Length: 417
Image 1 (cartoon, rainbow, N blue to C red):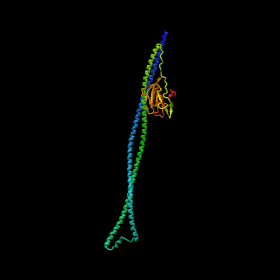
Image 2 (image 1 turned 90 degrees about the vertical axis):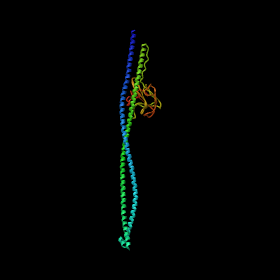
Image 3 (image 1 turned 180 degrees about the vertical axis):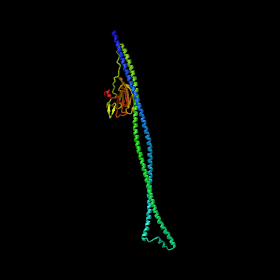
């Protein structure tokens, strides 16, 4: 009797110790999840701070870009004014050239008159030469036959003398006019050409300045694009952290439910032991991931093209089914600029938090916050995002996913491919 009582006490003690040990272990798992959640809260705060800085930097760059674009618009207006001024000067130069051409016609006419006068004067000189230079206006007057003839000859001589004098004066005047017109037009043309050269020089300087401003704007556009991508990356990280927090919270709830269920089973098992019946063993997670897709490994984890490839690529035909590598909670399911269609799943296996990533999917079959079972269909293989062929980019992170991917491990650590 005493022996039987001692056996019962021993069994109760062992059962209590087992229950206590199990409770401590389960409490430890929940504590780990709480710690992970706190870490994510800190990271979320850090990312939020960086995001704020990145947005400020982006605003600053865009403000500088807008200022330069405004200055460029003003500069282009000045260049247009210079171009209009050059066009106006070209028109004036054309007019001056036309004036010069007209002047050439006038000069030819004047030169023609001058030639006629020269011929007349030459004829006079030839007559004087032929008469030996002995005929004079006085002889002409003294040869008058009557007073009336004398008066007539005086008038004729006066007319001839005046005509010769007028010819010489007109000859001088025409010559002076031609020279003055030539000089005036040439000077005007020189001024116009000089002014045009100055305007063209100003325009060239403005064009050079415009080129510099365009270079600056292009540089700012590149900086803005980089800052925008950085901001988007941080926003994506922030959203992913928030999603992971929600997934961990859900995992904690599921873990709490599992603990309560396990406790209930242990209590039931204890009752069965007290009644002399053998309780069935409580199932536990194997801690092993399954292969997420059929196909061949097209790219390994590690160094690739001068960068680090944080996952393993499995290639196959478009539409090949993709399965959850383990049971967990979908922390993110969305279209990423780099990952394309991507699904993130948070797992809690044997007290360890894991995150698996399934990228470049043709389509997604699960939504954020959804609980998935090991081997459950989550999407189809594709080549969306930054991808060069149909494949699944598969990542395993020991812990939560982060921007630096510091928790990423080679999937071959857990799976055979």
